[in-house]
Image (spheres, rainbow, N blue to C red):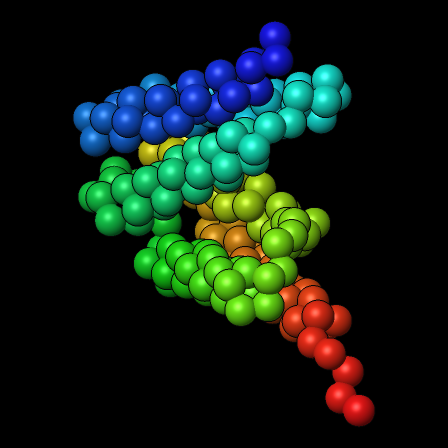
Length: 187
């Protein structure tokens, strides 16, 4: 039982190639089902790990890696592929990727230069990730079985952009505060 969260995370990671394959085969309903299944396993593994106090170093590494792998693959495919109805706009995918790359870069600098070892996700970062996942799910659904959700997808693109930019700004603000706290006060 103590390995269940990690097993769910590994299962989610194993779903990524399946998700990509059915997407490339234009089996968008199956892609939607796989994507939602992966999202549910993400919710479950976190809930189980917290509720039963089954957190592990492996899980702390694997969980965000599985999430990012699924999201990066999904955003890239549903931005670059020729889709029957709607694709994720290039500007949104570019913004999401730039924010994530900058965050990783700054966290790396904070860890290696100032030895800040803990930089937990913020509520805005989590909100941004959820909104990006909902946006991706909506794009898949529009292409699969809900073409009437096209206007909703257009709204989600803009909301995701705003939340991605805001969460990026919030992470930079928090990082700046942490750095200021770590630096010795000038005499």
